[in-house]
Length: 407
Image 1 (tube, rainbow, N blue to C red):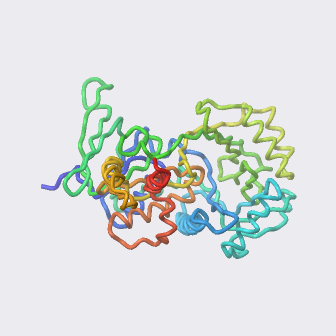
Image 2: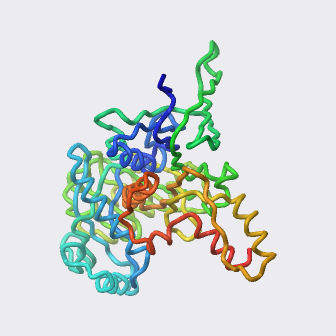
């Protein structure tokens, strides 16, 4: 008899990363179980009312820039097909200084970007010179996450959990899950075991809880943003504006203003001082609505503030790929260190386990493309990303760096 708890893939984490993996699997008609710790999906960093999809560009061509442009184009093409996901085109970046202007002018040349993608121009609304990302999108992360999980053939199953442990099984992975319920006492927990051909770890903030992943240099980052109430003057803005902080176009819930990132003080309480700074900075950069933004400084009770914790890696790049075994790495390379003639480290991987995380502030831009690549890899399909570019994002890059440093 078929095992009802047997899946082609099991995913941990119901944010944009986990949903992107689930979507890539559903396209291939794979039976997928997604486990989410919260009472619904997209309640943490992916729960912001509006986010921006635009690429990360470096002054000179780099693996970060090449990956981000590919990921941006992939995400834009896909999101535009989702008619029921709220979105609005056009982003305008106002440089903070001459150095940032030079960076983007150089990026246009380095990546051979056409004016259909990015153009330096004067914006009559903000009354500033800057860079027009013509196809950038303001999009609802919550709507997008739920759309990705709404498989037409119901191949994606979403379940809650309180805690989980995973083990290697024959030709797959075994996941033991604890969750509330199953007894007379509502607070009692019950355990259930699921089997999957592969496991995808997509909740970065839990990586530090497991010996298999706690070696990854990931840290939590606090983000805050403000949801401005709907106001006719604000709905008229022609672009989402980037100026260090950002101000999004109104998707029908109000404009989103933010966001600040703090690596040290991770309190989830809102800080009115930051909201006031948002309003001041935005009023200085978007002149046509400056007076309306300043009005809100005395009306903070009308502004909804959202704080969320996201994750970022040591080098600020996403992490995606097969999960190396830290235990085998240490064992194998202890032996290599005794044989000075062999100076190349051995990387062993945990079978059928993949990670996607540390997406930082560009999860909307990068997750869909990264998820497509690791799903292709897990199924033995050819990947579409340049192997040299991918090397810059695989988890083992941190092991290799430490090896070179003699650590």
